[in-house]
Each structure stands twice: as C-alpha cells, then as structure tokens.
Image (cartoon, rainbow, N blue to C red; front, side, top):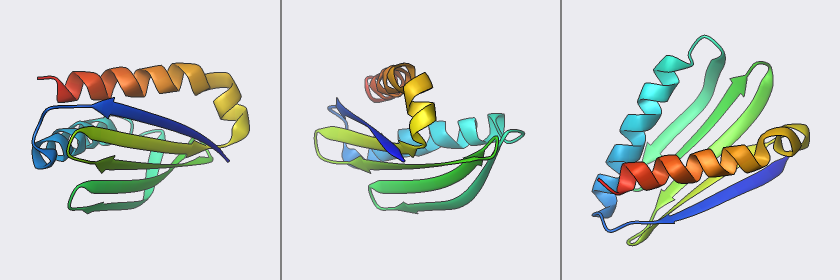
Length: 102
C-alpha cells in the first residue's frame, strides 16, 4: 500500500468543516455505488475513516479536522498510486479547498 496525504487550511469551525466533508462524501458514496462497495465506515467527532472496495481493489481513507487544518490520508495499492497519484492528490486538495472556503 502507498499513501497520499493532503493537508488543507481552513477558517471554519471544525464541526462545520467535518459536516461539509461528510455531506460531500455521502454524495460521492451514492454516486459511485455501482463501482464501489463500502466495507467499513466510521465517523466520530472530528474524524472519519472508510475502507472501500473499488473495482476489486481495497482503498482506505481517513479525514481528521483540526482547528485550522484538515488532513486527508488515502492508502491505495502502489500500482494505483503510480498511475493516479498526482491527479488524485490534486483532486482531493481542490475538492477540500472548495468545500472549506464557502
């Protein structure tokens, strides 16, 4: 497994930040239900953790909201990181920035 970590600054109340992230996640979960199966999902206070099978490949992700930053970590097989790593990092960073800047 290989790690992609994204840290984004924000000015929101941490509870509002995690609420927005969770809401966006739930929308993506529904949108991609035909190709992704969530194996585990846990949300507690200012953090979330998900393990999913996407097209037969297991991917895990965590998100932790702090007072001024949000840290998202994605663990995926090395071949996928080689193929999608840079794009995936950029997409996560852009999406978090958008969610947290409203």
